[in-house]
Every structure is written in C-alpha cells, then in structure tokens.
Length: 152
Image (cartoon, rainbow, N blue to C red; front, side):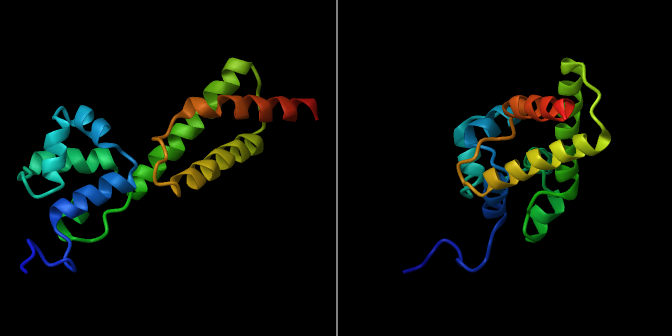
C-alpha cells in the first residue's frame, strides 16, 4: 500500500505544524494572528495548501522560529531571539508590578523573581496543553515576594 510520503522524511507542512505545537500556539490563535481561517491553518499543516514566502515569514515570526529552519528541515525550535523576548516580557512585568506596589526591590530580588517565573514557565511548557504565556498569572507571586522581602 502506497503512502502519500515517506514517514522518515519530514516535509515543510510537518515542520510548520511541529513549530506551532512547540510554540504552544493553538490553531485558533494562529488563524486569528495570521488573519486566515482555521481550515487554512489545517491545510497549511496537511499539504493541502501551498505556502508563500511572505506567509512563511509570518508563520515563523508568530511561532518564534527561524524561517530558514522551516525551509531547510532543521528542527524548528524557538529561536534565541524568542527566548530573549520572553525574558524581556517577564522583566518588564516584574518592573511594572514593583512600580504599582511602589517598592524599590534590590536588583538581586528582581533577578530572583524573574528566574522563579521563568522556571515556572519551563515547568508548564512540559505539559502539552499549556496555555500561552500570561503575565497576569504571576502578579500575585510578585506581590508576595516583594512584600516578604520588605518585611525582612
């Protein structure tokens, strides 16, 4: 019985789907971000639709991967730039929460809080059904850590 493609060889549409799944972007979120239907996302991931160069760059940007890795067949995992962006989001959120609380935590405490949040995010990413990054879920943790530090 013939198969549509050799299972040992990964094709562009496989790499697009795998990159989306690794970045924890849902089909619904991808369709909204790219301005296309969920059916079109499904078609892109199942060899039913061709991908333009412009669309490939949009997809790579959305999933935080290097577009060359999608084309060349290297594992399209999140780029360093994506990881740095995530760290920047966390640092900005921690600084914003410190301003809202009107506290001036020492830099070491800010670093500890950022590391704690990133570790929790890393633990969540092991779960295949993890939600996309939501900084608001850490506001209580940040408040608690800053208040504990100010009481010592």
